[in-house]
Length: 525
Image 1 (tube, helix red, strand yellow):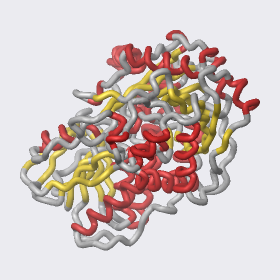
Image 2 (spheres, helix red, strand yellow):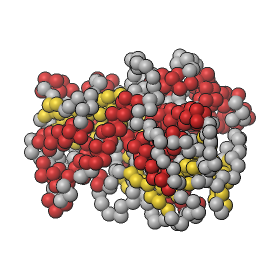
Image 3 (cartoon, one colour):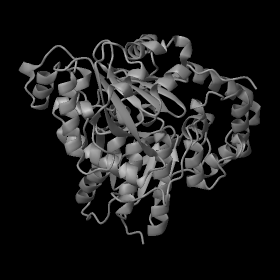
Image 4 (tube, helix red, strand yellow):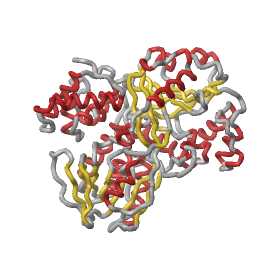
């Protein structure tokens, strides 16, 4: 039964905001979760889609973060196998001893020994992988190995590579749908405990004294009464500084995000070269590049460029696209990847802490809860964080907030499963439909309009972009056509979320968005 505690207000319905909402609800605390756009529409949607320990973080002495990430990787694989699966990654190396001293001095934070040569040889890679295995403990993914030459030579690595190691991490195909799963879990917990959970998207918060009012940005959906929260959590990612500024909450600059861009290709030669394994390799300039089998195609990334300005309009530049193409061809020259082989691209901004001067690779990748003492109620901003550590970030944050409110921690999500029973084999390209069926009960073979209607009714979708990019995941379907978009628009019209009078102009505007933001062409009817 709900007590007299006022709800905690969380601003930002990405993976961290949704995970924190679940953690608080498990502890009997009511939550109002608000986003000025759709759920998972920020950084969550723009990552490399890996659940990983962060092998390269070891070079920067972040062993505790790697340990935390590897523990969370294990929980993801155990608790949410419908979302996360094991992926073997190959690391080709170009020498035996390069980078050994530099890696060690980075781990022990001795910058005066740092080498300007970014290359990492077999001994440095093997040392890092051994430490990685040690931090992973008894996890069942298996230890790293040196691959036999007869196994890796047919792949077609550049002749500069002389050896190949492999290890395992996790891959989450659609973190967007994991956020839907978290919110579905929040609803179930709130119902079981008889406490409030309210989700409102496309709402802009306005602070009036101690109370929040919420501007409705779409003009439909239920109103939220003015709310005085027991605490406020700003989980709006790289827009966190702007959120605080709009609310009039004083703070030093907290965020200095970097842009990461990715390419998607369906070139048969590239898919055949990879097979079921991914590649984590040094490109022509020594920077690491991921080349990953993903959703029936190949995902390539990523760049790491300081980003100023609105994170919501971050787009892969032509320079970044050219750079990633060159990276792939420097690792797998026989594939001969060209611009016309790229089906689409995407780009987003990481919610990293503001660091005035350093290389982007050395910016800390951890997370913490920053407290603001000038607000009329306990007020915090989530700084940092990544897909892998969303649950542990939520657990640590909930402990801090509950202590401030004088409440004890009575539960956590360490063993909370989002899928029960044995997981069947999921064919490439079918995971989104499988997850939708698991969440809603809809037949995975249903037509697009039926699936869209279910996304609207059960998964809080309100626009074409919500459905295409974050529910049905059709944004990544090479067969996406005007027919599909029209069917989705009809589902929105039937639910009163789109006027039939503006259907065609809405479709044209959205097709233009797909072209400008993703470089994606929509097929004709």
